[in-house]
Length: 229
Ligand SMILES: Nc1ncnc2c1ncn2[C@@H]1O[C@H](COP(=O)(O)OP(=O)(O)OP(=O)(O)O)[C@@H](O)[C@H]1O
Ligand SMILES: [Mg+2]
Image 1: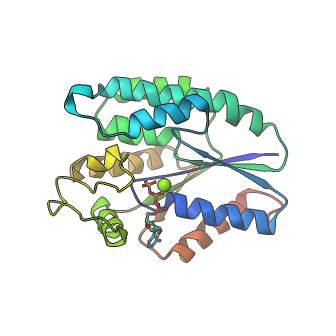
Image 2: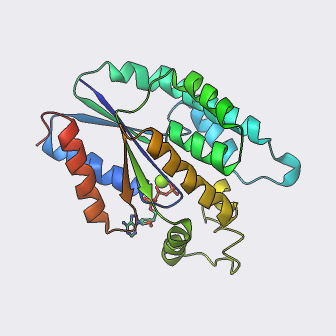
């Protein structure tokens, strides 16, 4: 049997870090294989849309929030059809998603303030109603996370942190350019999703030590997936 796990949370909350640790742990201690997927991305169309969606644009070239929602959703639909569905049929496989459908509700719904009913419908279409078995929400106050990112960054950072977020040296970090209020709404959104999806979603305090967080994740996964030591 295969399992589908997603990681969610605001910018820099440690999703990629925990996915890497989890993958190593699964490979070392079980006969499950891991498939890591990244949203948007992983497919040909998804990779192309990722560049488009994550790139900073001048106001003249910006796209509407609704177009942004539809492009993220197009990438997801492609990912579900071409990667998630076929792999869910394979035995002993754990699919780990670095962001999935909850990011759309949190970022486009709560962050961008698009109509939540529309988001819900579009999410249903784009996911083909395939939801993760388990979702880890790495939760933190965005101000704390941005301080952490800054303390780890090698770049010269803007002093007006509260209104403009860090510009990443790699360039393509559109959401980090949003004001802190946007990120606070995203966090609120995630906490609302948690309330309505508590059967699959687990909240973890992202301010803890990496090792403690990875142990909490491992404990939960072992309780849910048989034959993991
Ligand atoms: N528990 C932790 N304590 C301290 N630092 C951490 C912790 N987890 C991750 N980090 C560091 O914080 C930074 C962001 O982590 P990471 O890239 O894993 O976050 P992310 O959620 O994937 O970010 P993004 O939203 O940008 O993809 C990295 O420098 C990472 O080493
Ligand atoms: Mg990441």
